[in-house]
Amino acid sequence: MTTVALNAALSLRRGDGGRVGGERIALLEALGELGSIRAAAERVGLSYKAAWDAVQALNNLFDAPLVAARAGGAQGGTAELTPSGRAVVAAFRRVETDLADVLARLEQGLAGAPLTDLGSFWSLGMQTSARNALRGTVTRITDGAVNAEVTLSVATGVEITAVVTRESVTALHLAVGKPVIALIKSSFVVLIKGEGLVTSARNQLAGVVTSREDGAVSSEITLRIAEGKTLTATITRESAIAMGLAEGEEITALIKAPHVILAVE
Image (cartoon, rainbow, N blue to C red; front, side, top):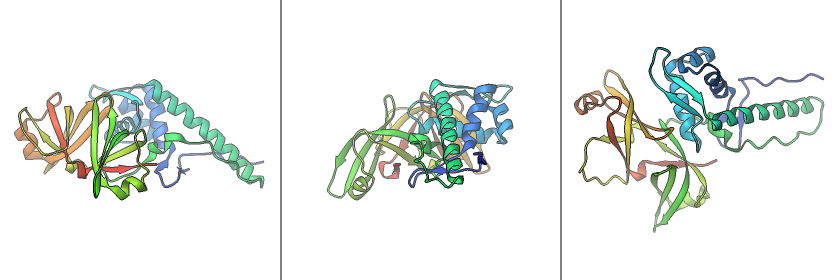
């Protein structure tokens, strides 16, 4: 009997959800072993920025952060797997073992055995053009004549509201308690500084600047909006300079409800 080994080239998909790959699991394992984002990135063949972005995406996609990370330092930032992160790694490797058994049975000409339920592992490989993907749970749905207002909790004390059509609520089977991903383009995030400004934006999220990356024309600003949860905005470099945005600055992110896209498994 020849056993087919699973490797990073294997893609797993649950329904129409995103792919689950070994690359992000390998990054988590390297982070847990080395305690350094830069060292882990080098081991798995990623740039430091790609690894840092992957850590933020993973933390945003799960109910609890998988990695406790801090940017900066001689090694490019420190990182430690949380209990949730260790549990995800261990469970993913168990799934790989189950899949190896299935492949071996298929080679023997046996009927395919059902795959182990992947649960929320689809989040590991979800690919989207939206810079921000925040996992949350629906807490409230307010129905209207044409549209509905859907509110989800993405962290303790942090809610995001989306306006979608009633047909979308039905098609996505949205209900209170259902896990949902909020997709938000970074260009849809408006930043304001100071207090007292009245705005029509439905979502007003307080945060602290954790990083600023300047390009020739635009700047990418990342905010910490809760423990293990971040939000990224793309604004003009001129605006970033005029606002004096720097690490540690308290800032408010504004997002119109119609600009929030909801996705489910």
